[in-house]
Length: 345
Image (tube, rainbow, N blue to C red):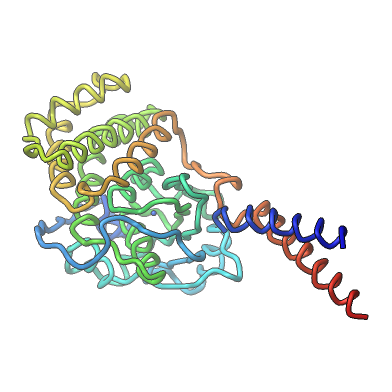
């Protein structure tokens, strides 16, 4: 019987560890076409019944293909995204873009960017990898750091997003796929949040474009933007008056100076970003205490982020290591079952 107690104790400990652990400018790629003509994002002050922030872990992995993706390129896109057989497949359409970003008139053909969405370990935040397609980065404008911060502002947390496209596009429609995957997983984010976050993507793009030779700039800019958004949310939650545009500009100037990029960001760019941050402050996401934690953590991770790859294997909740741990638990359980079978013989 002592052997049985040892096995049961070991199994309980292993199972406890397993259970305690954890088992994203968006116009339609301008409009995810190969030209560079910008479309206009409509303003909306209405909210819906969607969640303020992501309230549960993503239960499984998804791949969302742009409706404009050529059929013959789908397999190559899938390989670039690292899609496995257990990924649930969806398609992002022009109507999805209108639904999540309040911008009508987008065609299915303009939805070219595709995304994979996988659960990340708790506390990871949002991390984004832009994957090459046939050796080329076809996402010409939006950076990994922009995707990460904007998704966080929309209410996303603890996911790994991988983005690619089969032709050169701005990459603006990619986040539509992220929001659609979350909705399919049982969590529809509030549309006022996703629209306000999209405004930040729009507003930060000119600053990033004008500093495209500085690989550190996108991470530092989005970190500064996240710092200010965190402070604005705290101010709102403390019951204080909402900050004015002038207040936000002052806060942003200080945040940019802290990150060492104030001299690289024009006054016009700062004003436009401040206007976008004001809308995030007014959106439901800024009423959530967990948002303050999420956006602060992502801002800190972005401060020194460079290039297209933010996430590694260790960040995935369903990584190879997690699979090994699961297999180990199964082996322990099988040992218990076999032991008791032996007692009965």
